[in-house]
Length: 184
Image 1 (cartoon, rainbow, N blue to C red):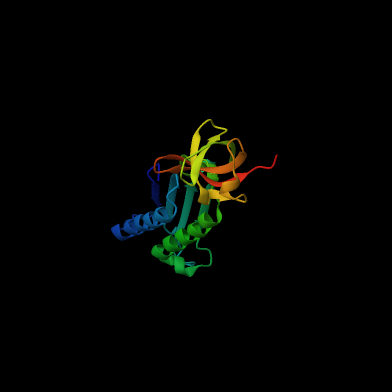
Image 2: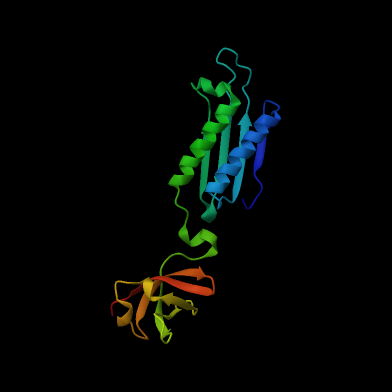
């Protein structure tokens, strides 16, 4: 996470076991969703309502790239299993995981690399190699291999052909993926 998680416990003093469980769940979630930028966790102990049981409540709030947010509140209403704060924590983090899986982050925000297609023109080919360079509308030359040519066979592409492609970061510099010749 870009910002350290903000963890609050209300109406009870958490044991080391509870703190460790929250930390473990945060680590697990972050390993699956490394692009989470901020997180707030609120774990509330029961309010002494002995007739209905001391039900724990867990509230989670995550901020994702592009300003998207995911919130989860496991309230424990009618869930007597949430008399155990450890079960409430587990259930809240599982619900958060399901929501995070359903949220599709803006692909242009991922890893600072624009993943949407851009336009360009084939600038040159590399002699004796099935590869070349595309000058993108961004003014950058992007390497591309014949395997990235879609729709039009590589040997039918010509210098000056208008193409669209998906820019990517290669080991040696900018790359063009999924190169497609545009119709005139």
